[in-house]
Image (tube, rainbow, N blue to C red; front, side, top):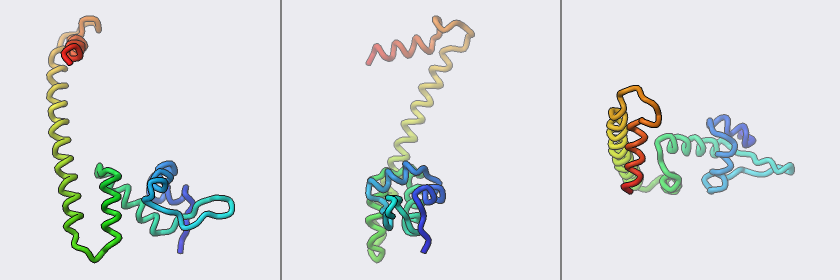
Amino acid sequence: MSLYLISEVAKKAHLTTDTVRFYEKKGLITPNFRANNQYRYFDEHALKRLIFIKHCRDLGMSLKEIETLIALEQNPKQNCHAVNEIIDQHIEHITNKMKALEIFRTQLSALRESCNIPTTVDHCQILKTLEKAEENE
């Protein structure tokens, strides 16, 4: 059985040691043991869990979603409907986020179009429009 120091497991999972410590603090992983020098040692299971977490985070999943998936993983014989629900909800969340980002892009493009003439900053239509938008809030 291979054991890794926190720096080694972090490197293998392509994470920082601070991130590994954060996931440990959140209870998502646990070290196998602490040596007399207080160094924490992690096994292959912890490494696999870190890689799993990293993949989930790369897909924009929240810690709560990841915690739920990990909890579901602990009961491998159950129906995977709950996993599908989490992914479906996340897809909906991403879809809504994409719609919001598209609105932002449209607004920013309109802002950019308002300033097509080279001028000085004190006459910049983008800044003037942003100042007006703030007044209206």
